[in-house]
Image (cartoon, rainbow, N blue to C red; front, side, top):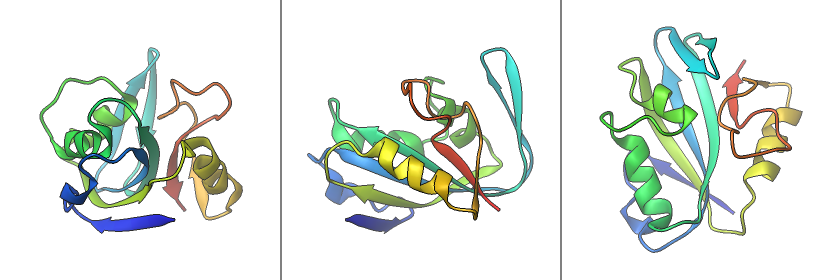
Amino acid sequence: MIHILPGPIINFTVGLKGTYILFIRITSEIVLEIRRKEIKLKPGYYFYVGSAFGAGGLSSRLHRHMRKTKKNHWHIDQITISKFSEIEGIGISRENKNECQIASKFASMDEFQQIRGVGNSDCKSCPSHFFLLK
């Protein structure tokens, strides 16, 4: 089951682990640099699928994503620190790690375009965990 959280109301996830989806609005072009390659993100609505099964779980990871000031560690950080991006909602799944299954569902739908090579650096089977709503 996926629960939709409006904005930063994520305190009830303390102590929980799971998979999450960030609903991100980009208002002006953002240029990412991934593996010495530029990827341009045009304005629109994007969806990022991630998971938080380590220390801190969902609460820690989601609060981190909401901060504009942080060290760039993941691809998604380049997006979430931009003044042209806003996390407008969060979906969570407290089930087993199903990040790739959810990403595959997005990839299979005509309404979404995969942004290849973004958000999947620790995944060997998925071409992306980041999607543009067409």
